[in-house]
Amino acid sequence: MKYAHIVGWGAYLPKKVLTNDDIALMVETSDEWIYTRTGIRERRIAGEKETTATLAFEGAARALAVADIHPSQVDLIVVATSTPEYIFPSTASRVQDYLGAHRAGAFDLSAACSGFVYGLDMAAQAIATGSIKIAIVIGAETLSRVMDWEDRGTCILFGDGAGAVVLKGSSVPGGLLSSTLRSDGSGGELLTLPAVYHNPVPMLGPEYLQNGHGDNTIKMNGREVFRFATKVVSDSIEVVVQKAGLTLDDVDLIVPHQANTRIIEAVAKRLKLPMDKFFLNIEQAGNTSAASIPIALVDAIHAGRLHPDDNVVFVGFGGGLTWAAGVIKWDVTPPQVSLADREWQRARYIWARLRSRIRKLSRRIGARLLGSPTPEASLRDVEKRGKGARVQGGKGERD
Ligand code: COA
Image 1 (cartoon, rainbow, N blue to C red):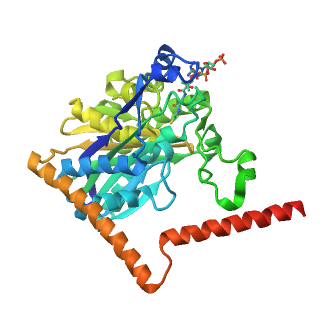
Image 2: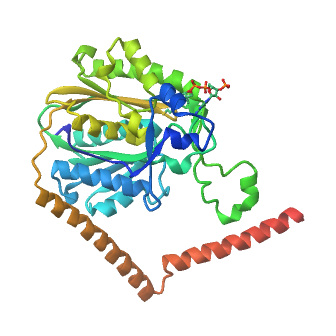
Image 3: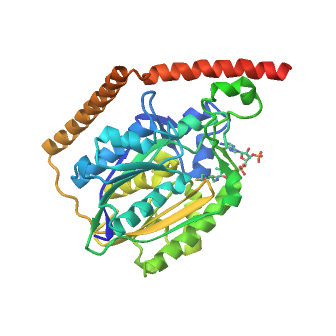
């Protein structure tokens, strides 16, 4: 079972569309400037009740439906994201709960816009060793929540969404043929998103925020990132194709991270490949970071761009700095799933939510019976202690 094949795929974009014209009402820019410099016309913005985990769940549920796989068969869920709601519980654990994938392990992976390809490689290796058989790899982001909406150098680029694939072990050669994962941390400051400060702990107090902390928005040196991207994308495509024992002529489609059309044009020129070897959907989705490759993959499938036995290259790059690429032999014919089956699959998720609630309730009842504090009481206690610590800290400074 050492070959990891993609057997299902799914994507979810929030309903709300934010056009370039909408952004031009917020910062000094124009549709023409944004489109000519990036290739983006519009992006999606998550609704108030949507989170990275709910978007990821939608993508994963669709991917399982295509694969006709029951959530209980899933061994591992990997969510590549830079916008988790919590450091823990991980987004992947929330998705595991939403799906009712009760036999699965789950973890988040942080490799910025390269995260999906990193996740694909990790899951495929776990399949190759025989440690697992079925994995869901998801890229999901709510970047609109970490945008500085006054910075026209970044807020024009990013959007929200999620995409997922189901990987399944098989003894039939194919699936992920080769991959390369790379990083250059010395360039980390070119693209940053601070963590943790979102809800500063009460002990640190407002002074902490005034000292320059607490701005958890994306900062970027666009020009340098552009230069870095054109080089590493072309280099890693060459490396990964060679590793798979192929040449560029054998590649049928490249699904790159959707960051900027001009980056891909520069890569095409460097590799002397026609632009139609690259699949782009950046015009409608913008840069959805870790979600961009699986979303583009799903759009490519719907556009009829993938055929049996095609060699497909995924290539991602971004914060870290990180970059990664993989070659997939596209060899899947998805089973025909009837409408009734799909309805039945949806009903499973309603049951999964209900079961999760029952578990929460039974945990609470158990805690009451044992006399341990409920999660709400624990939180109140922490807040009380936090206030006390702040008062003490204030006294110390005056002394
Ligand atoms: N609208 C209008 N003008 C803008 C603007 C906007 N949204 N953003 C920047 N400008 C202005 C700048 O202020 C600057 O003006 P100045 O010459 O008067 O100082 C001018 O345009 C050129 O700025 P620069 O930053 O050099 O533009 P650029 O051609 O490099 O384009 C990006 C900016 C962000 C579109 C481009 O650098 C880029 O896409 N980089 C890669 C980013 C990326 O892909 N990041 C994600 C990686 S995962």
